[in-house]
Amino acid sequence: MSSIDIVDLTAVSAIAAGTNKPSRRVVASGIGGKLMGSKEMTTVTAEQLAQDSINALLAKDRADRLKYSKSKHISEQPWTLSNWHDHINWLNLILVVFIPLSGFLSTIWVPVHSKTLILGFSLYVMSGLSITAGYHRLWSHKAYQARDPVKLIYALFGAGAVEGSIKWWGHSHRIHHRYTDTNRDPYDARKGFWYSHMGWMLQKPNPRYRARADISDLTDDWIVRVQHRHYIPIMLFMALILPTIISGYFWNDYLGGFVYAGILKYFVIQQATFCINSVAHWIGVQPFDDRRTPRDHFLTALLTFGEGYHNFHHEFPSDYRNALKWYQYDPTKHVIYLSSLVGLSYNLKTFSQNAIEQGILQQKQKKLDAEKLKLNWGTPLNELPVWTKDEFFQRSKEQKGLVIISGIVHDVANFIAEHPGGQPLIKASSGKDATTAFNGGVYIHSNAAHNLLATMRVAVIKDAVVNGNTYNLQMETLRKKNKSLDY
Image (cartoon, rainbow, N blue to C red; front, side, top):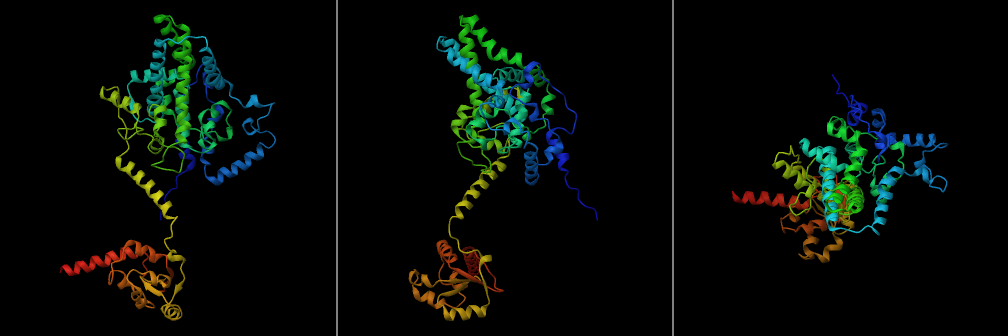
């Protein structure tokens, strides 16, 4: 007899990580390879990633704690006056904090020109949409495909957002989806709002939690390769030099273009994108799944060009949409759709409405089940003692108010005086099997009556046909009775 092979975790981890095949090596020139990233966080083998079971992770943690007991990584050491500078990712701090701070301070003496603000807003929209429609939905999730002219625009203006290259951004984001709300999640929301918003970039990560995702499709894209290799000059030109030249050449506002349409513009884009990692995991509802932190909220969508319906996105990541309803704000979705109408994008992916409705219904059911647990539905049948019929007869002589209904013994003594149909009806059933009488033989009881009856369970009868759902049993009995009357 042949046996069925079991999936090799190491092999499939290699596939998920992209280490099962040769891939292009794409290295950024200069300091670009270090921009907002860390090689030590992605250099990991499939064998290491295969050890993802809870027990294996716990065992590895214990081993690592022992290993670092004498020489801990800086991320595992407490912040002190003597080592605080070692905790910081200085390059990111300069790009994300110090340069924007200098821009804000410059506004004290740099006047504002309306044309420069219009330019800054226009570049903000172009760069913001290049991140959401390009970096995120096109490259990270392959939610659709685009022609090279569109991809070039996204690559250029996306670089102007100063958030790293497509290759680095896409890799980090795929790791985020693969390991959401775990230590391997680059912007793990469980570590607090500040950490998921900016803190993860400003401090050195723990190499114990390094991870990898397959990005061979990204490195096979010549636009991604060129942008990554020359990211620093492209970023500096698109983020700072271009707005400076435009503002200076056309309305003689070089300094304003550098400050307002350059530095402050990219600061706002960065903060909007960071909100996807923080605010979208913090406020809102979870209509599809509440096991993880992503949430849906209009405010987040407003801040992030429509990326705020994050609970939907994490459930259906390859859907080119974030918002489903016509009134939900998702300009990125509309840009992608409109570009498809003129042939600039194609193969727009959507999950089936059936799958989406399934998720909504399952989440509603989960919430209903949680509410149901708060109520008294009677002792579960498997927790009730088992009585023989003789034992029931003996006990009913000593204790009034014991009634058998659907193979279950109920103690209705305290309800005799409250029975809407009068005390004699219940007294007449005491010590007897009242299944037929209760289930429509005398009265057609309401659902509330059946629920109340369930709270009075005390035992089940041995070898009897036991049915805890007396309401459904009553309805089935009445259906059969009515059907026989029709003949």
